[in-house]
Length: 252
Image 1 (tube, one colour):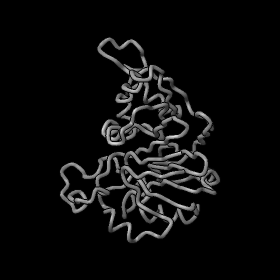
Image 2: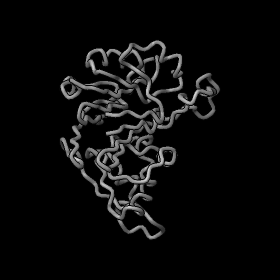
Image 3: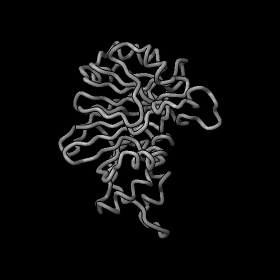
């Protein structure tokens, strides 16, 4: 199984519009961050977690030619607004696209993309969706996904564990009841926004504390803001931790 980081930036992306800081003006390609998403490829299937506003750009960059399912961590704009761009895969594959989200998020998707869900849009092609409400672990073509409840500020959202890898973005607190779901990991992908505390995200220091507690073999930080330059920050991280970057590919 291959995991690709489609995007590793915060909700504004990096560079951020109107900013002239050193990271936003950096020539290092690792500092060019689209909104956060990952892609899994296994057994001829492609599964994406979150369809960001940059999904089209990400798919073109990675040469994506098929899409078999989308999982959503939550329904903030930086995680869902690329859903319309999945329609090209429906046109190509002619199979309704399975999407998975918890009940609150699915209700938001139905409102935000009413023209898709109502099924009677008369003004052009739209994707046909096969919606599934997440209520527990589920299997996609032989790979089990376990939802991991976490908090994004006061909003309950989901991370996902699959085999010995977990993807936990947009998190400010991991409840004690979810800790066992994140133990024994080979790879932990975790929110690490910036040096200063934030009400809805782990700061860099908080992320490192959680990595130390969970003790994965490797950890990658994502949802990174423009306060963290890739090269300067990477030189300060303990050995099991790395900053992820757009296009990074892991063999699981």
